[in-house]
Image (tube, rainbow, N blue to C red; front, side, top):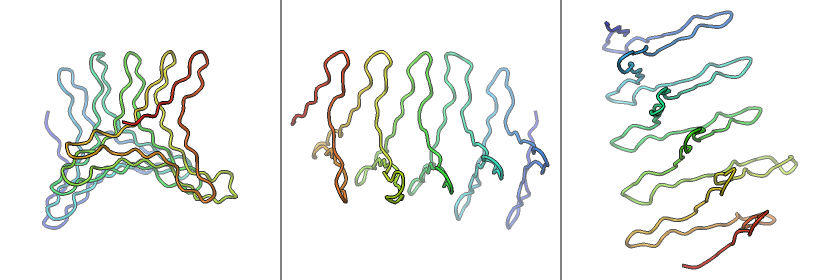
Length: 239
C-alpha cells in the first residue's frame, strides 16, 4: 500500500514543530498508538524513532517520559522486546548502547530520581525465571583499551547523613551471595585476579575494613554450620 508522510516544510532558518497529541479531558485523556500491524506471511514492519543529524553542533535528543500525576503515582515507562510464541525460538533481543564515536564514547546513566519525603526507588538487574532450562547469566564487564590502565568496576553501597541520635545511622551493606539450591549444593563464589601478561605480576587482593573514629570493623573468614555432616575447611596457602 502507499506511504504516508507527515512532515513540516523545509526552511532556510528553523523548521516547524510537529505535535502529535490527544486533547485535554475532564476524565481520562485518549491514548496514542504508534506501530506496525500484523503480517501473515512475512516480517512485520519496524518502528524507528531517531533524533535529527546536526552538521555543526549536538544532535537532536530523544526524550521518553511517562505521565506526571498530581494526586497519585506517576506513569510507568516500559520498554521490552517482542514475544515469541514458537517454542524453538527466543524472545527479541534488547540492546542498550551508545553509538560509536570518532572521539570518546558516550556514557549510560541509569538512576532513580531524588525523593523529597521518602525512600528513593531501587534498581533491579537480573534475568527471568526459566521453567524448562537454566536461567540466564548476568555479565558486568569493561571493554578493552589499548592505552593506559584498564577500566574499573566500582560498587559502593549507600551513604547516610543521619546523625547519631537517629534510629540507625549505619551505611548501606554490600552483599555478594551465590545461587541457592533447594536440593543440592549452592553455587560458588570465585574472587580472583586475572593472570598477568608476559612482563608483569598478577594483581593484588585487598580485604580490609575502613578506618574507624572509635573502633574498626572485623573481618570473618570461615565456613558455617553443617547439620548432618562435616563443616567446610578453611585453607590459606602461599603460592
